[in-house]
Length: 141
Ligand code: AMP
Ligand code: ZN
Image 1 (cartoon, rainbow, N blue to C red):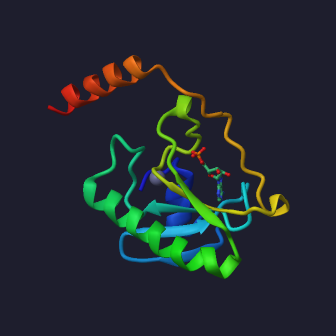
Image 2 (image 1 turned 180 degrees about the vertical axis):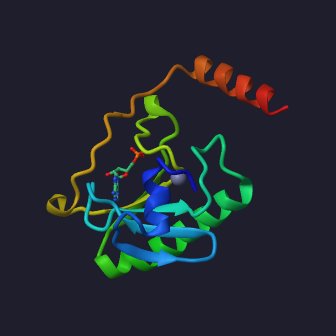
């Protein structure tokens, strides 16, 4: 728990939220700026800043909770699919620095789905892709 952290406040109950699920390790609540109907966030109760910092057990618990909630929410809301999203770092769109997974139900019906990422897939250079892949493999050791 950190005093300045908005999501620590939500977990502690000092900041209001629309809770959808909770277990020993995780807390899930509706996003106040939903990208689609049913957009929610799953956080670890224990504060971690981001993907780089979160301990493996908390990450596993948050991911499993997100899957459990997505499996219930998608059919219940009549969604056609779902995105799980994590933003790590301000340049990767992170705005709240307490790790969270977005669970974003997706809809063919765009009146229920306002989410649009500014990424338009276009073919990459095959050699550059292979060279970058090799760098990642080398970094993994
Ligand atoms: P990110 O940009 O990945 O850090 O996502 C932060 C998310 O937190 C955004 O989608 C916000 O809409 C959401 N958010 C911010 N404040 C609150 C709040 N008080 N209750 C629920 N969601 C919030
Ligand atoms: Zn926090």
